[in-house]
Every structure is written in structure tokens, then in C-alpha cells.
Image (cartoon, rainbow, N blue to C red):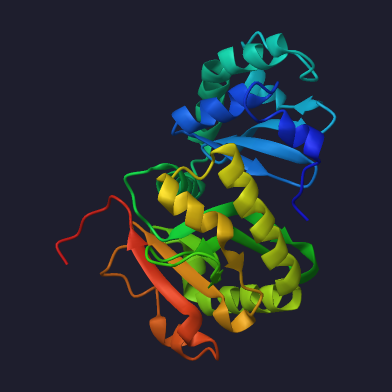
Length: 277
């Protein structure tokens, strides 16, 4: 289960040792902060540029540190954290160089979706992302994005559905087998729904507490009281088609309509590609 100990969490609050990391993420739209089991990850363009363990140990891929002045193995004092933050521009540049050899825009769009739905106050959306790249090894499934749905007029203390988003960029060949992939996700969630709902509830509250879900006060007051449903019939599966050419026949909705849980599947289309159609 994705969970952090209380001492570690305290360091991310105001005046805490790690608080500058949270503040940097809030103000830097290219960064993404995710909570793991006993550690946190900081992402840039879908790549982890920081793995910070509860004991303060730090892991960063050496290829991302080339040319930087950061060589600490742990965050024990403010200088360690500040040194890392000062070297983020160099680390980012190294990521860009590595990514240029094998670009993967899909995961970049995942980060944009997290930013837009969680941290942009001007976007009054109804999906909140609590996790990305959630892996269920038992069922060989990995969800791009997971969270919950809360409609704008949802009152306090209501139950809200778990939501899973599968992002497909352009003409991703996996689109032709989307029914098999979504079915695998459905079975995975069904088998572990109590644990996933409990974890999502925990991540929801922690991200609100840390300022990683940034909405007007009245909206946050409602979000804090919501309970994530553990009923499989409430779960929503969203397929996000990003820059998908509408003239293509790769995406076949008929195979999705044949699934027994078809009414729980939604299609989202977005991106920057423009077609007259």
C-alpha cells in the first residue's frame, strides 16, 4: 500500500526539511510528485529525477546527474535539499537529452493531466488524480492514472467512485486491443477493490493536506469529507485518446460495447492535434 510514516510526512509540511520540494512542484508545472510505499518520487517528463526514502536516502539515476554539482546520497539538512533544487535545471536538461533518443509523449500527457486536474485552480474539473503508474503485479496490470470522480455540486460526506484512466497517444498500436486491456484492469480492481479504495482515500487526504490538490477552499472542504467507494459497480474506466486521428479506424468502440461492464467505460478525447473533422 502506498503509505508514508508520520515523521516523514511532517517534513513535507510548512517549515519541514522537505517542504521546499513541495513548493517547487506547486510552482513548476513540469514536475510531478507521487507518493509510494515508504518513499516519494519526483518526475520530469515521466522520468523519476528523485527517489526520496523515509530514512532520508536519495536515489537519482547517474545519467541525469551528468554535469551537476549534486552528489549527496541523503537529505539530512537544508543544504542538501537546496543543492538538489538548484541543480534541477541541469537534471532536466539531461532528461531531455536522454528522452530525445526515444521520445514517449504518452507519459508527458499523463503529467499534464495531473497538473490540470489537481493543481490548476482555474480548471473546475471533476477528476482528481491520486496516483500514476499504479502496478498490480498479481494481475499483471499497470494503470496510467488513478483517482476519483467528484462532480462540482457533490455535497459533503458523499461516496465517490474510483476512477482509472488509460492514456493512449496518437495511433498507439495497443488501441486495437483496448478491450482486453480494460478487461484486465477491471478484474484487477475487482480483486483488490477494498485495498485500492482505502489507498485512494489515504492519498486523497494526504495530497490535499500537502497542497498537491489545489482548489478553492470551499471545494477542498468538500473533498476532505468524501469517502471513496469500494463497490466495483461504481468504478469508472476512462480511455484518454490524446491527439488521436479521428479518420483512423484503429479505435473500435464496438469491442468495448461488448464488455459486460460497458456502462462503466468513458471515452475522453483531447490534445493539441487539430483535424477539420
